[in-house]
Length: 444
Image (cartoon, rainbow, N blue to C red; front, side, top):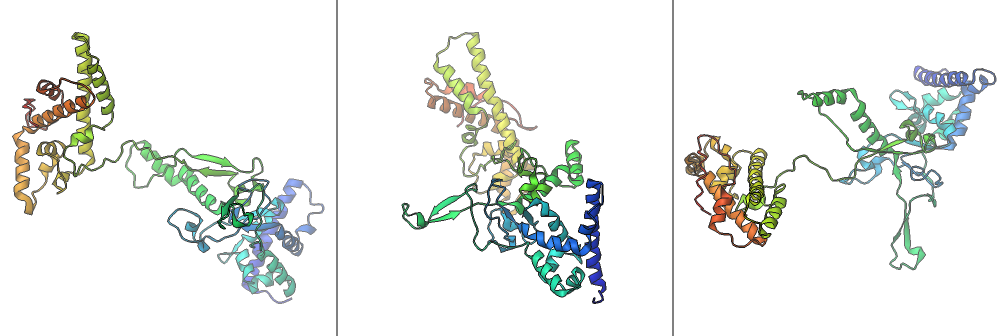
């Protein structure tokens, strides 16, 4: 027997430790060593494992995840061999991916054996290149060792003729141009990417239970500042594969306890939507028409006025309630616009709003330094703001806007008197020292 070098001894030591651990686990479950010792001798176990490795197959895409009774082919396609697409898929995993195993669950211990790492690589990787030190550690007979290594390397294999099954999902894709010709179809079979599912599962588990994200989540809940990004996957669903025996689907599925996360296939719902720009718009009130709740208020007010209600206190109170609600929404609209836009946005050449609306929606522009090439324009803007008649002008424009909306809705006999009345309902905030006079002049 050739003298084993130090590296070969490391291989043999790692293999011996694994086999001994298997023997100890068997003794604990059976409670007796009778008949177990010969089976777990070094050469005997390796010979049996080399025989049983043919009962399992390393894969990346698992057929049984589609249907547990499917008997077709699973596939092993390294993500790096797939075409790169902009969309998320198995190809994004690159070289960092988890291989899965399908086949006889009783032989999964062979896969665990081949995952043992020596010198930073799996035994399987060493087997596939016929590492001489590993071969020396496997068996003193070089031919036997080479045969075992070849058998173990066969864990990764691809069927010469992939086979589908009636329990698999299948799409018959017409390629021949003649639907009546059965030979003119390609059979497409979508396969479950177990490697991608495993990567998604690891990310979600880390976000849900990882200590770092737990600390960030706690800071978020307590409204404390934190330098740690906080990740959260909401409205998750879990697809359980394999029932009480997830190992019957695949090894990785068993490691996940059969849990395969599904992200919510829903449009995102934001608490506050990103507001579209107000550039190339002649009046912000056109945008206000579609602001939250405004359409419903307009509809209710127009319907009430068209009903020709009796001129009494109840009528007046109901009408004022609707008018004041519209005025209050004008206040919310302006606050929302100011909070969502950077000061000075009205300096954009594409801003077509009248000066009073610019002053109303971009008051913080007055705090900015004047532009060297637009000093006269910026000085005029600040002077107009300080003059303080722009709130009345905005209120007057609100009155005109409401008059027009009601007329479009079929309310007749509306004129200057009604316009002045609507304008008095407008709530236009102006910071001191701008006076809030509400002297509605009726300007357009």
